[in-house]
Length: 66
Ligand SMILES: [Zn+2]
Image (tube, rainbow, N blue to C red; front, side, top):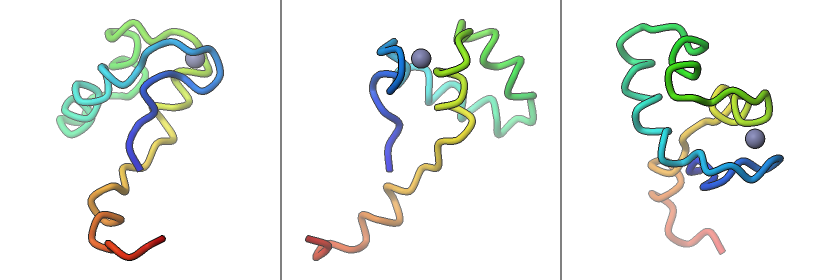
């Protein structure tokens, strides 16, 4: 879906860094370097960035999902 606003484990706000992370991933930089530059240091927060799959565009096509 969309990235959680806060880390599920520690509660640090992470959603504000998602767009920049996504932009830099597309340029071919290594994820570890990007997360270091963004100041995302804890393992829990890094795992959210590394494992998140943005599916909101695909799911939004189906309006009668309830
Ligand atoms: Zn965290």
